[in-house]
Image 1 (spheres, rainbow, N blue to C red):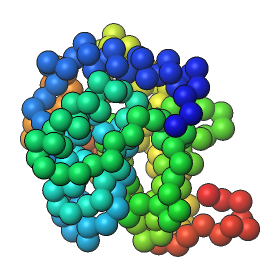
Image 2 (spheres, helix red, strand yellow; image 1 turned 180 degrees about the vertical axis):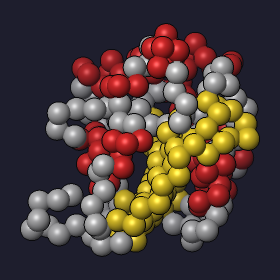
Image 3 (tube, rainbow, N blue to C red; image 1 turned 90 degrees about the vertical axis):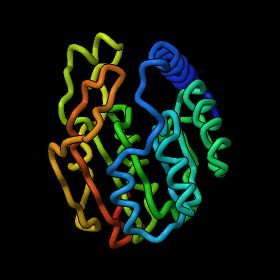
Image 4 (cartoon, rainbow, N blue to C red; image 1 turned 135 degrees about the vertical axis):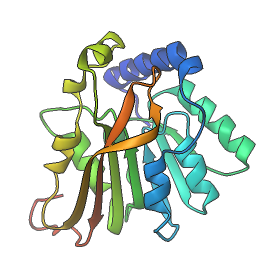
Length: 218
């Protein structure tokens, strides 16, 4: 991993967030959308983007997936690794931004991004990296909070306008993808340090045709 001054700042900021809210975060359990969607897929390789405390990654590994889990917070990754050890499963933990990650040849059979903090940038690097991580025939699962309180988020040091949200991700797909969208699915157990997130916006996309290397579309 090459750590740039910008990525080092991002790492520090997210370490501070996790340190501040660690004792207020919900119990360690996988997100229900991951459980529902992955249950119908044959286990293969999986990338968990923004894995946080690792509940999804640990659950997937327990179902036979070969899991790589990515986050920018070392505080979160240490908690996640401890959870994997307790569960007796193996997960490859990486501290990195998605756009700085070396995606393996062929990509991943499942790419899951629950509430990802993927930055808007002029070059669109995060969006390209998100799509390029999916193997041909693979599935991309992206879940955002449907009920963001912008002012509350800003008070926690997180400005939603800086990141790719549901509609931004939807705009990334071309005709190589089969896309299913669900808006406003209620969570049985609210998410967030304050239990403020009660509904999810969900994108499930399957890459049915690989990119044409001569088209310039990745």
